[in-house]
Every structure is written in structure tokens, then in C-alpha cells.
Length: 262
Image 1: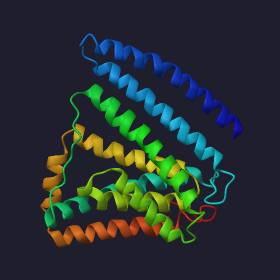
Image 2 (image 1 turned 90 degrees about the vertical axis):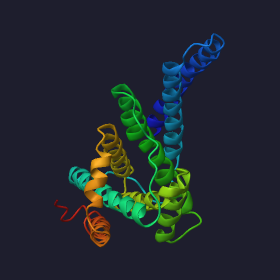
Image 3 (image 1 turned 60 degrees about the vertical axis):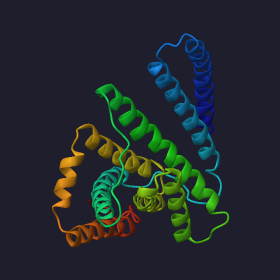
């Protein structure tokens, strides 16, 4: 663990050494009134790496503390396959919930649009699917939940509070319910698998699915297909998907050392 911390500290210092001259260069370029799109992208990327490294270092420092103890569990390859299948089911359930919410309350607003394949590669894959998933899971599951263990004894309340903080952090009031459900799923997945890599995988895969649907412009046709179902059918399918995810996580992932077949 201490070797990882030293490597992360060196990586952090290296990124800071890159970030400072780039920042000064951007400030100098601003005085010439030239376009800064690519410079801002590089600056934002390095800043994300620095933040991820700092959060990861703090996460590693918390490992000896009481709380959820991460470790390599048996049958981890089957756990990875199970996590992928769970996330696909969860994403399907969230799409149904989004459609139900749009029908009963108000339509959802999707601000993310990609102007080109390069934009999708950076924002959709690198930033949203990779860096954002790593940073948010390290913070909410790896750090925040460990700190909650010091003041909250109930695992249920830790999951609910963590999911609530996760939903409020995104600042999208119309989609708070979807973020809350996703936060509950990721928190329970972390608790059952005992390793941070699995919620990171699930979170990144979900973000990749959503951004890919938007980039490929499949969101409108997908909405039409889901909306062709009756509201009762959508509710039944959504509840069934969420219950199946919960049942699998609780009764199959909780004992990976026994029969953990897919």
C-alpha cells in the first residue's frame, strides 16, 4: 500500500508540474484573444488527474481504519462478469424509470451533446466514463462511507445517506431520483463485493452506455420504443429489473467463496 501511495504522490507532483506552466501559458494566450479550446481541454484533463490522485491517496490512507475492508475476493473474474451483467440490467431499469418519470412528472433534460468523435472520445469516454467514475466512486464509496461508519452504525442508513449525497452532488434536480437509485446500487455493490473496483466498473460502464446512446443518436428511437409500452408495463419491468439486481447482489455476490456461478 505504501508503495502505491509513494507512486501516486510522485504522479501528483508530476501532474502539478505540468499543470502550472500550462495554466500560465493559457493566461498568456488569453491576452492575445486566440481560441483556447484545446488548451482548456488539456488543462482540465490534467486537473482531473491531480484530483483523482489526491482522492486515491486519501482513500489508501483510510484502508487500515474500520469500515468496509477492501480485498481481493475469491472468484473475482466471475464477480466482474456479474458486475457487467448487473450494470446492464440496472441501466435498463434506469431507462425505464426515466421514461416513467417523464410521463408522470416532467421530461428529463439531457444537456450532454457531442460535436465530434474527438469530443466523444475525450468527454464521453475519458472524462465521463473513466475519470468521473473513478473519482466519484473513490470519494463516495471509498472515503465518504468509511467516514460514515464512525458515526452511523446501520448499513442501511449509510447506503441511503451516501446515495442522497451522490444524487445532490450532480445538481440535476429533475434526475435526482435516478441518481439516488444508482447511488444505492453502487453502495450496495461495494458492500457486497468488498472491493472498490466493482462499483468503479459498474459506474464507468453505465456512463459509457449513456454517452454512447447519445453520441450514436439512439436516444430518440430508444425513447419511442420504451414509450410505446404502457405505463403499467414500464413500471412492472422497472421494478422487476431493480429487484433482480438487488436479489443477485444480496444472495449471490455476498458469498463469492461458495457457489458464485453466473
